[in-house]
Image (cartoon, rainbow, N blue to C red; front, side):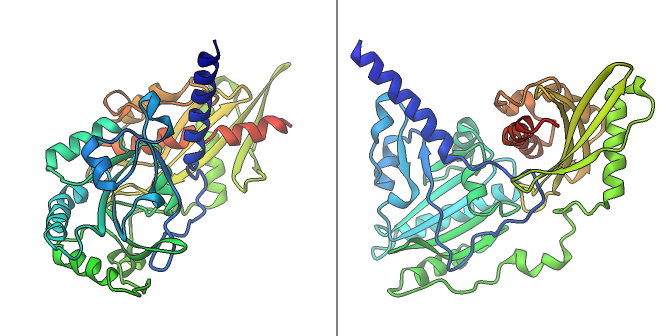
Length: 384
């Protein structure tokens, strides 16, 4: 009996630990600081069972939770002097092109007696699950460990870079792993990364400004990373969406903008039909893309007082080639999410839940809806 109670307690601890590792994705358009040279790599704990050869390579033990088949290890506890992290997504064409380049870097460093025991490489699949990461590694014949980050928790922790591949080279210091180099976008020349690793390994090397391709193109970026829409247009978009779910209500009253304690905004609309009053809440959600050439994802969702999703309306969502979603794409996504409860987490299955040629955008939409629970809770505490 005691053993069963201990087992139950530890399972609860495991669930709490897993939840604490995940940072909720931003629903608002507020920009985050993207990690760069001189910054300390954020602490992050993985709950993921590595193949034995990967555990040995990273120098991490099975951990407390391994008894239940889950390996626990911290990014900061990897016994290396230099960490090379690549945030990728298996559907990103630039990431697919980056894979052989990074493999050459790994092989070159592994052949250098002065560096091979000091440097460790890790791939982080932003928005990818275990199956996708394993398949990508197999297809690209990658030699270093690759881990899923299906809820974007580590990706968001480094500032939601707005694309992949996003490569970080970090050096161990007393404060933790300090970023020496970071780059958003494809690095075609493997020697560029080899040289950066060699520079990072020099005693006393510290973070220094590094020009990144994304910085050079920032002023000309036309990927719709931000939603530049006047307030009156937002209001009209919301009213149009509400008409689609309340077609018999005639005119839709003006939505009222509410700022929550978190700083996020929602729009409250009170629709009265005879003696019946229906209160609906709409949030406009903007997410930066997961690949370096994709457009931002902008849409809105409406839910009621019970937390039931009532409507999904795209504002700007694209698929492969940055082609806007068609009506059947929108209808498909709506069929996956409308009617679902914000109280229950949606588990994204790319095989069943992704719009064709828009897997990354679909994953961002589901992830964003999962992050709405705190918004619903805040509204529930002050329903009026």
